[in-house]
View 1 (tube, rainbow, N blue to C red):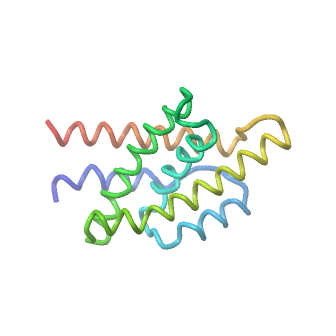
View 2 (cartoon, one colour):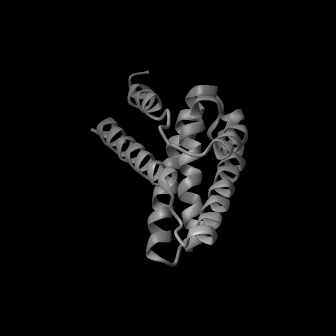
Length: 148
């Protein structure tokens, strides 16, 4: 259980202060409802997956998004395993479609932003980027301290 403590602490930090518009928030909440307490982490994984999909892994931004997506997918898997007690493969099978659903919502929002304003990011997405980036860094720090 000692090893789980840093991950549980991250869950407390993940209650996203990600300001999004109400309709988007309702859609995201509905898409991730089955995820329970792991939802904020799946949301962040989907956020970076959306950027990877849009930028392509061959590009520098796409490669950076893939790295962040993978880190958060690992974190999401570990947290969901703690939450459910399920095996890793079962958890991965459960969360993959949830991450993809979150990603699809972000892709739609980014595409709509660009069409409407010429900019891909809005204030809510900037807040999400900041929160998810911080969450990832805290996870990496926690994992590093576990390995010491």
